Image (cartoon, rainbow, N blue to C red):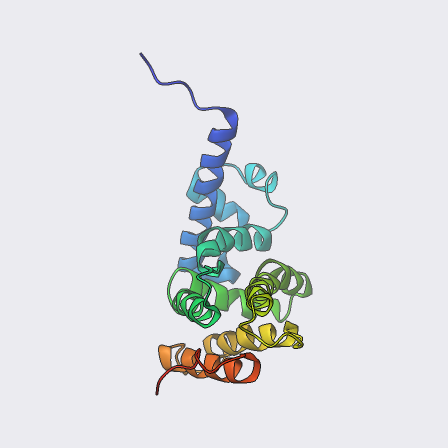
Length: 202
């Protein structure tokens, strides 16, 4: 008995994955400036109109491709220990920012965004705001369970936590290593924690 033919939705999903993978592979080779819809189409074996039906621009296509492979590195686990969960997520995202395919491509997009306000706004919406919101949600849950000070406004804290890692990755030659992450989290827990149990041992 033959297999049931794939539904149009499943075929469409497979084609989308092919296009996103081709986009990442090509971007890793030529950078953001050298990337084009036409080149992605040639790499994936489709016409440019097929791509434009899904994505209105090169930036939208590339950010969607980055988002697809980076999603697992942005998600927080919730073990009930906020410091442990922040540390685990920061280690994963720090490695992703420092390694192919995400690291080099993301740095190229950041550079292009400085002269492209539309790309900059899209980058903030798709990545930076998402990272900050995920962090804010995790530390807010910790506040509700009593791990963090009840009266604290944590929005700025979330921005500082994320911003420190992105600064190190994009502008500094210093690594996002365990020592850096532990130091950052020690300061956070000293400022907002309700006990000293979350501090690392030095």
